[in-house]
Amino acid sequence: MTSLTTEPTRAATEPAAGPAFPATRHDHRAELVAGRAAACVWGLGHIGWSTVEALRAEGVAVVGYDVDPARAEQRGADAAGPAGPAARVTSDRARALAEDVAVHFVAVPTEREAEPCSGALVEVFAAIVADTAARRPERPPLVIVESTLTPGTVEELLLPIATSAGLEPDTDLLLALAPRRDWFLAEGYGLRDLDRIYCGVGARSADAARDVLGLMCDTLHRAPSHVEGELVKCVENAYRHVEITLANQLSLAYTHVDMVEVLRLAGTKWNVGTFHPSFGTGGYCIPLSSRYLLRGAADATRLSLLSEAVDTDTRMRGLVAEAVAPHGRVLVLGLAYKGGIKVATLSPAVAIAEELRRLGTEFSVYDPMYSAAEIDTLLGPGTAATDLAAAVREASTVLVVPDHPEFRGEPYLSLLDEPRERPLLILDNHGVWEDRDWPGHVAYRRAGGTSWLDVPAPAAADAR
Image (cartoon, rainbow, N blue to C red; front, side, top):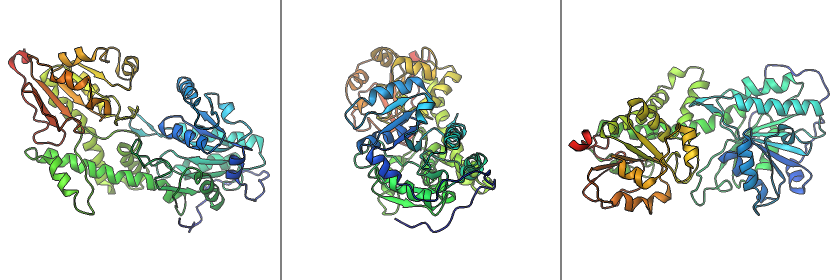
């Protein structure tokens, strides 16, 4: 763990006059562990809920808040298990600001419609600041932002809120950043296992965050200040965004080559990663990382690689839809952007469905993790395939988007193997079925494989 090497800059706005809290250190971790205080997690998506579960596992009393009452109700049911002390799940902001809450984890989305958006973050932080200024609690609350931030958010948006309320950052209110790294379902890459970056707006904030985060994380790395800390998450994901985009561009430039195999072989070099062409990236992190950096840069024209990554990544969905649209009805298997995770944020499946609708192509969507009602809510009425067997038989093309484990078993395989009069094209994003021997009526393509977007022409009956 590195030490704090520079003092962070202060917000330009001077704090209003008012009594400051004593400049003594409050042991937030000890209060949480002893049960004298609770933590509140704002935002109960995948990131926020995993924080709730990690805190409960350490015996910490937790309040979980989500602005969506339906999600809060569902998470309340999830919290009934034996993971630790019961979480108080609510959509009532007053309960999230209860007097016993000493630590706030903020895990709200910072994007809207595929663009950086700090509105929810600012709203939550302003509520915490207003409550702190009104109550003047004996101990300064600790706010740990787990959301990914556009560079400049702390200086331009958050610190002015605190100072205008008469609170001195790092004295009256402790503010830290600890953006999340997640490998989701991969064994050995959980919240405790992954190295984590943290920082504060001052030494007290950083120290308090280190102590509390140490309850859940084994390896912590301290950034010199919040200025550097804001950038780390965006930069590390932008690296991956550019590399994935290069893989896609190579597959488009060398259509006669199996680029999946070329990239696999390139990845055998000790300092080269292995990347795969795809329908495009998805989720909260990688597709947005370049946009965060472009939005926060003083001169975005110097980040031309990131601009090109955004353009290519966005274009991939349209290329897939345009390739399969002339062949007739399409079945999209998977709404989630990643296998085993019920998250559809910026999923390629959503953009492909929108493009198919624009092209006038009939299609339906099926995902074992989503109900028909949920799919219709996200993509429009009548989109969900309510009868999987019928949807497969009616389709001329099957697009496999996430690599859900269920896709490797029944009933999917037997349905695809069924004899049929019309040929069937399968376009597989992650190579879920690349090792299968397919019957003659199936034309199988994996994203990045030879001529993967140069799909076979439909039979005459299909054309009619």
